[in-house]
Image (cartoon, rainbow, N blue to C red; front, side):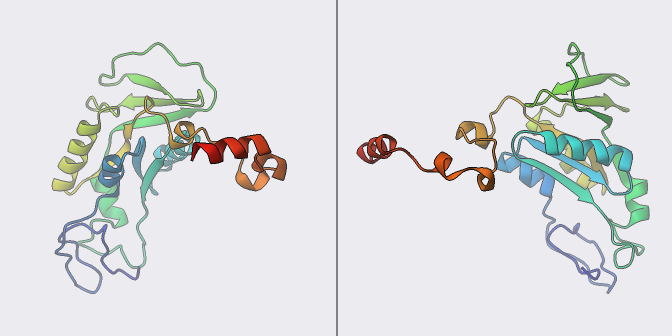
Length: 206
């Protein structure tokens, strides 16, 4: 806020007041992958064609989805020397792929993700996220590859944009705990109150 440096500010970033950040940067995407999130992406508020499909995919994903959106403050974080200024991000963003989100679509046969080709990733709700390679091959299913790509981009002071990592094989916390899809606020008392037999069985098991 107000141009101050924060935990996510890049090392050596200079604030509008002239202060330089000397501590290592906390990268939210890397942190999310290491913490076990199954959907991790990054985009830029100045790139709506990429951001909107990623937002739709994150909302549709069953499980923890992290979407890091770089949104520079054009008043306090738009000065020369800022790594998060609008002009800097526009010139130094490295887009992994162009994306289309298809809400209800039968997945196509899997194809190799080579330059100029696309790949449809089937999500838990049977919706499809289409990945299109631009420039070079990138595998969003590789946890190690995602962390390496983020680290390399950071060293070059570039912003890696796109779907960084996705894991559709591991079940979500809701599925693991057999949680209901209905929000708790919408459940009736009869749905929440266990029967006498269920309560007795639970007490005996403890």
